[in-house]
Image 1 (cartoon, one colour):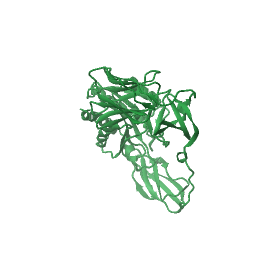
Image 2 (cartoon, rainbow, N blue to C red):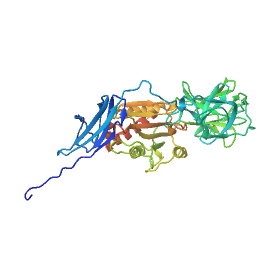
Image 3 (cartoon, helix red, strand yellow):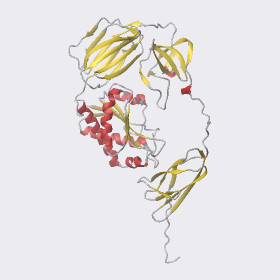
Length: 476
């Protein structure tokens, strides 16, 4: 009408990200959704906080039977949108059928042993258990090692390493062996110990390739390698360099009738990386121990990994943040801070691509890095789970993880945990100290709001770098 102006109200967006579906037996339900930042939201008439990202989350009680869950969003000018969902809460049966899982099935033992040969990237597991990252790994071993398979469980062989030791190996990482392949216990041959300039190397002659396991001890500081299927006949243990860089001395022990244990005692309290493997196509086992670098970031080479990438977005927050993008942003900030301190960096990715885990490890090895950090952000099945975490596989990386975790909590983040024996692929190598940082939970509205803030991401990067410096000071 002439002389009047009509003002159209803009209806707010309202998307329910998480809510109960159909029939449930729980007494409560979590509701997570996204609306316009600044909108006012109620769930069943109760006001719910809306974060700067537009995300909101709450928990509602469910009665037995049918339940209506009404979510309403209202803008500052009064525009309203409503979503109503139904779910049915049923009585929980006392006798719900739960089929047996593969993990609970017994190992089927073979009537007679079978011989298999390891392939590239083979690893041994302590047991037959499994989770989303695979079973708990004993360690990676070389190809062309003959193993005696004595049973099977799902996708795994049960293999006998020694008279008192079994392990498991994925079948896909083996091939059948010629039954004429020699087996049985062998005698160890001569040792040699030499300073190569960057590493101290211990080599042990063996008649053929055998399986092995490696670990570290802290008091005193030592690298320990068990060679399975061997007895001692090493009458020459020769140190060929008077001054060794990090090894103090070596020793051995026959800890079982066919398990030969190598002890490499170190001059330093911290391990700076080591590798175990056979030379070329031969059967000489080489244990290469890296010398301690100068304990300052200046001049060091730091490996950085931004988790996920390319077709793999990683976790996605309620408002649509992609973990792969957040990870890369934090890594680039860490890189810039390290360069200002005189360090060099080797990144597994610089843009939105997704190298395989094998390729990422290869990039780090080729870059001859001194320390490594992989940056991810977490996700959980509940919006209530939040906080920061630092994870590691090998015990010698615990101090590094603790230093970085302490710094990250200075941002105001709660500590979710410092997690050891974690089965993440990039934590598996022992060639340098390494950790995985799970910055925050993408599924937590509080953490999501922080991750969306460039200033907070910068703060996270700063704390990671300070944690690395703390670790270097601890090692002095």
